[in-house]
Image (cartoon, rainbow, N blue to C red; front, side):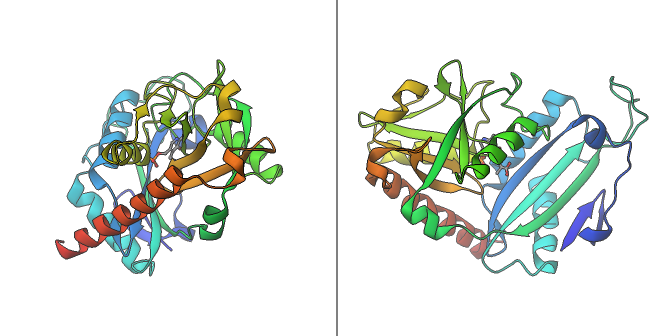
Length: 291
Ligand code: PDD
């Protein structure tokens, strides 16, 4: 696998950063993950906009801003030279405040950020998707800026690990009695025929998959309410699923060992899952047609 580090393309196994990198020392950075199908990135601009928002909130100045062209160039080369232009892959970009002697305040102006990018094969779990997965619930102990995609992910790591240890795929995080999101995906449910999901505020990441799915649902004439799902309502949901770049739509059919929606993926979930898959393939194919 090839990596991009501060302007250079090198084998990932030889890529190194300073032990004083603020990403390593403080988790002082942001990241993005794009989906790639047959060598083409899905939703380049929306992910770039979220990355730019995170950089601006953290006040990290990029000497050369990542443009659509430069991002595509980096992704193209990484995907090509890592033999990932066929089928599914992810493109990961991380930017930290750079390397400087350890001190909590920002380093001197002009300290160059660290820019790292790499690609990985993605194997979508189709069999699990078809039968539906289980989830657990866990308290959401994260900070109050979950809208920024920072690399500080320890509560998310704990949540996912707790899920895996009980044989579940993910943990639904609960804050003040409502479901916020999963460890690396948004959570969307159907209650009394209406799609319900947490509104985009400082308590969740504004997921790009979430936004696309909600638009599709509205297009299908399904009512959508950006009102969070109460923890006490989980047991009476008609349907439940996760939505994210590496997750697509993943039906959740059990929560804390209790069946949701009869224990099988529901019709709205399946309709959105299929529509999303078709849209993902079509938009990456269209990017091929007009390079
Ligand atoms: N995660 N919520 C959280 C906490 C996330 O980390 C993610 C994405 C999402 C879904 O956002 P999107 O649809 O834009 O991918 C929601 C990435 C994929 C990850 O950490 O691997």
